Figure 1: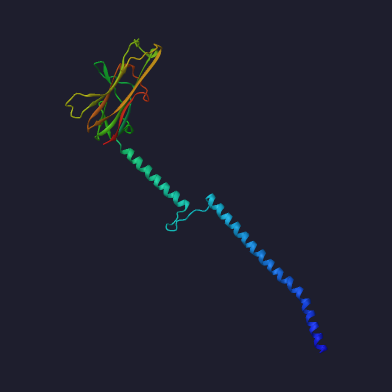
Figure 2 (figure 1 turned 135 degrees about the horizontal axis):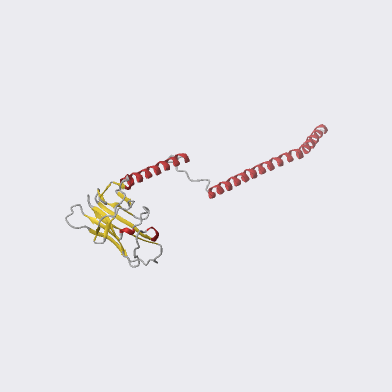
Length: 251
């Protein structure tokens, strides 16, 4: 009986000594789980914040999975091809547009005067000055019928030093006239545009006056247009100052 009591006493004493050792082990396990959970939650919070920031700044974009995406090089190549094709079409279209731009022929060849007006001779020998149009007898000849814009600019000048004779320019009248001559020639030429005036020159050693005009008109095949001026002896021979031309704007 006494032996059994002693064994029980020893067993209880051993259990009491082991109990404090097990308690700390259980508490540290709970703390590790709590810290691990908090760490995972913190990482998720950081990842979520980064994702929102990237989305707001535009780094994350919606992707259309239904259609394949082109690389930047492919997109640039496509845009280049489209641009080249458009430029090529524009250049081809421009080459086909009937047009003429003729500078004054130098030295100036004064034609016979009719009613105080002289027809101007132009430089129509250069191929680049005429596109699908002809030039003959100081006239531009239409090859493709349609609506055209016709223009002309003439400059007059008087340089006393280079003049062989004195000319009274105090009340001189200068005029520019654009004529339309129909291909049938069944009726007299009509005046498409007219500009005239008496400039108030200061009677200096050098005087200059320019006139420029233009208008749209319907021209048929083989119709002709030409320019006449008054006081042609005062025409400025500079090719960039005095010129005549037209271009087709529609059918």
